[in-house]
Image 1 (cartoon, rainbow, N blue to C red):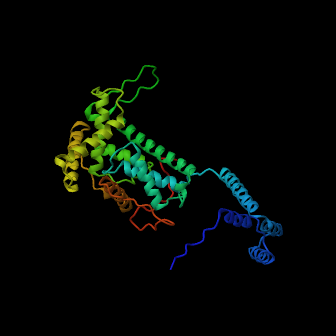
Image 2 (image 1 turned 30 degrees about the vertical axis):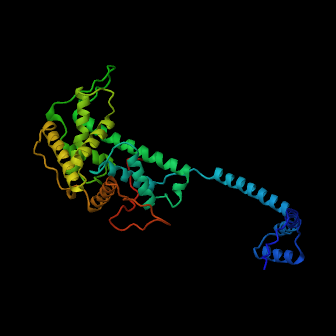
Image 3 (image 1 turned 180 degrees about the horizontal axis):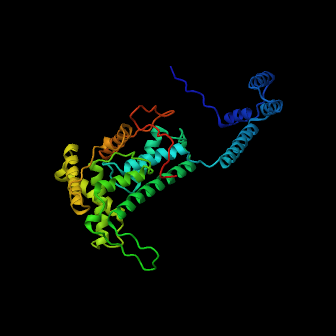
Length: 357
């Protein structure tokens, strides 16, 4: 039995169907259903009239009107965006960003003092803990993020400047006043240098706004301050080129220490940490012998100079940086409305005076 092949419609037939569709008009039943639906949506009288007119238009006209409405909506949205007030960082957000930046600069796990890494870490913290008016969605507003990123960069710059100024004051002769002569920096006698613990304490007090100590002073922090002071002294002594960038020297030294700790292709975190600690311990001892008159100066336990909350906060920052250094993801972005911060984590800091104000 011969099989019959399906009948193929001619191009003329398809053209006729298309013309019929494009010329189709709404009937009374359709119009009644459309009008009833529009009424349930509580449209205004003039809007109901517009719906009736639209329903009676040929399809090509309807499509044209839809496209025109889409363009009009884009224009309206653009006006709203233009009229949107400029994002301003409130005091709570300023306080928490400043505290986090200072904690990172005083962390024993920091990988560089200047650069994009620290800024990115702060933004990760913001996305997770939603400090101040950094609400969900702020990171998708480029204008707002420009403001936030500039503030973060400014705080890093201000805090590094505070650290550098205290280091300068710890060893240099004061700059002469009321003189037109070009000042040539020089070192005071060794016995007049500020001891490493007192220097670190001065730095922490300045970073804390001068109202107390909100960053734990530890031997590890003192050792990193000793590393910073070493490079400033080298510049003053003339053993380095004058145009050597100070913070680049510090960051390069920090990188060299971490690279050396991974010698022999070591990947064991405990071995690496032990080698890094040994290198910084050596720097600390050299600083004690060279600066100040109290070679036996003790560095008190952190609990003696700050409270448990500050110690816990710094520990959270240290842990986050350590995990990031090991290639982990320590600061996942919270989804939805953000995470509820448990006690002991990086909770929002009360609005107090900061170095940013």
